[in-house]
Image (tube, rainbow, N blue to C red; front, top):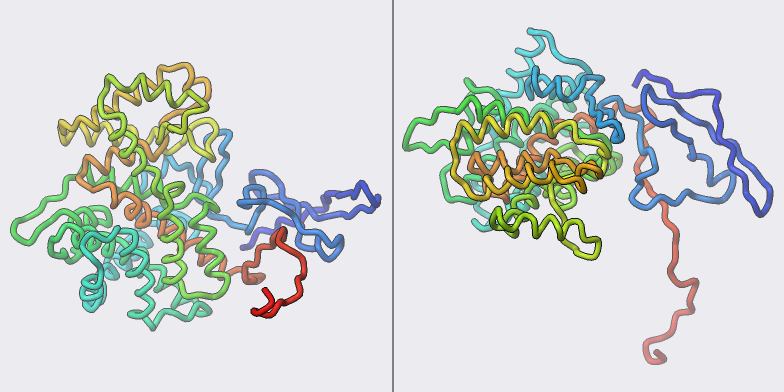
Length: 435
């Protein structure tokens, strides 16, 4: 990175017991809170910092994504997420994250060509799928097949070579969509559909997921655009759990395929990538419109473990800037498909009632991106088990961009968090007969 965050500001830390004090450098970013540099804290004081879940710790310097949860701001390389979703395409956003800015026409054509012509996978991968049970969870398959790519593409594993890093990045962005579609087809017992070079990224993905060899398939442009928006809105989200996992794995100089597989494993958790699936499962519990008041009352009861999934967000304390964009797509998709699905009707009624309820309005518990993405994906025909897989298709762009940024940082060191040890002190070994 070319930006130098060093300032003349310092933070003074004083020990109340000894009266000793230490001055620590303070770094300023271009936006957001300043950071106290504690790298030398242990050598100067004999103390580490304690920050479970690292929610108050800056783990890196990054120029990719900026979030202000209080104001509902999400920007990629300075561009507002709403503008990108409405005016751009997923491939343009991928170029933006990977290379630093939106492409011009020639750059866009070249980048789309590179990604398009990397969408096919080695034919041996087809046989690799046969090792999985048909009822295996799609995310379990994705962990395996993405990690296995390093066994097929040995020519781009030198992370110290800029050209090989770029080739790996292009391969991952392209092939994760193909493998995700193959995972879906495998789980439902249908033949794999090879990618088509005449389609856009999102059109091609829908084609590979829903076309069959027995008849022609025409991609619905409204669904393709909605899919593209979902990919854009999930492309990167700063240093979340899966992105931090990719960075930590990459800090050991592991190959990028292994790092992204680690990110997929982290994303699999229901507290992370499984949130939109949880929305549909919640709707199954509610079952009918006339039971909505009952479940809203339960959500308000602090002693009831029931949670209203898809409302509010851990990061966004005001509103999720991605949600309003996706709500428009959600309305367009449902209108175009004309689906008579009680669960989707239930979701729309739940949204209406919750947005009028003072309890949720006062607490700013508005529908988030997971609420609308789950409804859209359900309407498109994806099973809930595939929702997190689609998240991974989008987030691979962010993961590989973050990985590339980290690898190119001159001061890169292997990640090594510390701990507060609370186990027993030294014990004397006792022979087996004397225990």
